[in-house]
Each structure stands twice: as C-alpha cells, then as structure tokens.
Length: 146
Image (cartoon, rainbow, N blue to C red):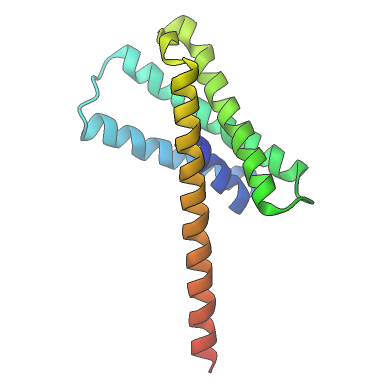
C-alpha cells in the first residue's frame, strides 16, 4: 500500500526524509519480491518495479503538498484528502507506464476501487498503531516521572 505509506511518511516527516522512507519501503518490497517470492528477473518485471517506485515517490510528494495545503483542517480530514491525492497520483503514474509495459487491463474500476479501499484500511490501521504507540509512550513517561 505505497500510497498509504506515502501519506504516513509525509504526515510525520519533511519531504526529503519522507521520500527516503518510502524509497526504503519500496526497496524492501523489491527485495522480498525478487529474493523471497521468486519474481522473474527480466527487463519487464524490473521496469515495473521502477515504475512502482516512481509512483510511490510521486504519491509522497503529492501527500506532502496536500497536507501542507490543508494544515489548518483537522488531521483526519487532511489525511483523508492526502490519501485520495496520493492514491490518484500513484495510480496515474502506474497507468502512464502501461503503454510501454502493458497491463492496462489491471486498471478496471473494480480493481482500482478494491485497492483504494485496502489503502484506506491500511491508513486507518497505521494511524491507529501510531496513536497507540504515542499513548503508551506518554503513559510510560508519566510513570517514570512519578
């Protein structure tokens, strides 16, 4: 869910570090795919990998822009709009690669909608995990202070 990772990274970090974090997530994803899942090591697959990486970076930049634009709104609203922007940018970059790499058939409304819902669920889960961690950290700090 690179669009989701892009939103979370953009919400927590300045653009430069957010891009590095998302690039690292992409690199781990590629290492798992080629190293553990047996992705074919051919030009087509490698080029799709780079297209996915580029899409993730564009989604991160888009998230940063949207979050800066909406910094006065409530966080859930800003995160929601950032996800919409990031997901649209991510899918646009991937779709733009299809004339060269093929695969336009994977961009049906059903598939794009399903992946969008999964990205939303990932965002909810990651934000919840961050909030739980933040709350536990503050409780621990209070216990250490007393």
